[in-house]
Amino acid sequence: MLGEIYKITQDDLYELLKRLARNHKIIGPVKKGSRVIFDYADKVSEVLVDYDKRILLPPKKFFLPPREVLFEYEILENDVIIRDRLGEISREKRVLIGVKSCDITSIEILKKTFDRHFKDPYVLTRIKNTVIIGVMCRDVSPTCFCYQAGSGPLPRTGCDLFLTRLSDDYLIEVKSEQGQRILNNNKDLLKTASSEDIQIRNRIIDELIERMKRNNLPELAEAYDSLVSSYESELWNMYAEKCLACGKCNFVCPTCHCFDVHDEVSLDFRYGARIREWDSCHFLSFTRVASGEIFRKDRSSRIKQRIYHKLVYSVNDIGVISCVGCGRCVEVCPASIDIREVIRKFVRR
Amino acid sequence: MRENPYIPRKAIIEDLKDETPDTRTFRIKLEKERFVFTPGQFIELTVFGYGEAPFSISGKVGESAFEITVRRIGTVTKALFRKKKGDVVGIRGPLGKGWPLERLYGNDVLIIAGGLGLAPLRSLIQLIIENRRRFGNVTLLYGARSPRDLLYKEELIKWRDMVDVHLTVDKGDESWHGRIGVVTVLFDDIHVDPKNTIALQCGPPIMMHFVSKKLKQLGFPDENIYLSLERLMKCGMGFCGKCTISGTYVCLYGPVFCYSDIRGFIENIPEAGV
Image 1 (cartoon, chains in turn purple, red):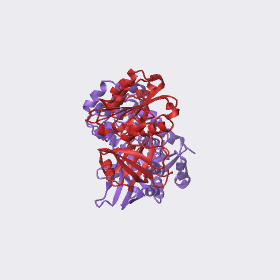
Image 2 (tube, helix red, strand yellow; image 1 turned 60 degrees about the vertical axis):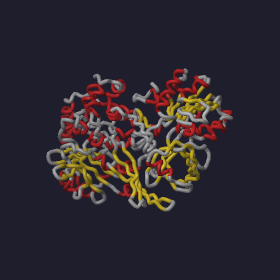
Image 3 (tube, chains in turn blue, red; image 1 turned 90 degrees about the horizontal axis):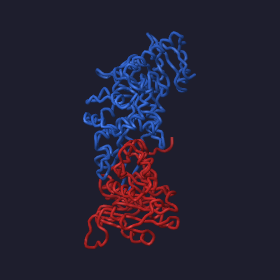
């Protein structure tokens, strides 16, 4: 049943992963050099299930890769043969484990973004073919604000199973029918969770919320009206003067989805490929049309584009804000522009 | 899942015709299916080996082939200009929303075009001419840089039988005896009833900026003015984010927008003239 909570020992959790690894590739927090990143794990034991820091690049890259070949083609005398890459994508089944609530919510937002009038088969197929096992945060970083973004500490939807680390064991929570099926097939690994266990879990959630409440931030969904009426505010110029238009905030954002498309061709001109690559609304080239016209020349218009997309346009478009409060853009901005400060400035409480 | 909307359909260049020194009209036929569109919509065209770019459809509705009029300006268009009759290209579309036909029936129609902006209006003018009795007075104001930059020269002459055509050029030559100046000078030559006229415009942003101002001065209500906006419609399906204005995807909800919708955008629209 959805919402049902079981208990599983750490060893049995890795046994569950091992079983899933028979027909899935496993993606999770993995140590690479001195860093921990989301990556494919060669061995299940490599996965750091409840790694307690926020990983810099979100798992978005497994659904919308930084660069991907959409299709390839062979140029013939007077014909062309097109080879779709979708087949390969739809064959790959994956488990993504160790994802925090903010990132789980971001995958839901990506799903909404790519499933509207048209369906983006690349992104949607990857989401469909990925079992998502989330994990409760054990810590709040100074830049976290998922609580005010409405995306955490517990995700509403977007994952199949959700883990909470107790001292030695984990609680494992059913969050989807697929999650239920996985647990049904692995009943031998599960134990009953006691009411004390559940209380510990609830206390962890309460504590995470309490700590985030201290950042004195209004709920992000309330920023809509204030932002709509502040578009012409002089304050934006102040941010425009600071912003370097480097696009780092876009590239670490778990919901930024804009991309550019171009073709690449082999030197003998026989083979071509259509490539899509992440793009940034902070770049001047982002709105440049063939005639040379650039529609967002002012840096302030580009700063606004990103903030308004997250908190205003997204609501109009997919019904929810698209900032999940992960704080990555705050952390990487070389000009110390902090979206929380922007919100505090514009939202009258 | 349905067929992959990123994959272009193969099409053949059936014919081509030079319009001006740097523009050419291509007549294109899908290899397998019929092509059904409404005036004002656009396509994404692939020149294999070079890339894909958006073009508004300029030919007649209801024919087995369709036309686009292209200016030689970037990588894809330069490659397209090297294509010959019978060559293969890729097509996605038709995409987007076109001119508001239902608003035009029974009303006067004022069409204002600048340069290549006449292309997406040509399909509409052809449709009006074939169903002439369903429309009131129809006026075309068209401006180009010079007489040789006027598109569809032979058709402009033919259209005069059915449509009130007014032309102007920025810079004349010995052969030119018509108006000189930007397209707004042509407003001096016409009389329109703003309440019963739907104004449709397409051209460079600076032209639409001044035309919008002019139409408002003349008393056109916002809901009687339509603009075709040019933005970078890369994917054409509301995903890549490059064509948005105030978060609204031009590729999905445009390129034709009603002025009243544009006025509702919080982002500045240079074409709106406000």
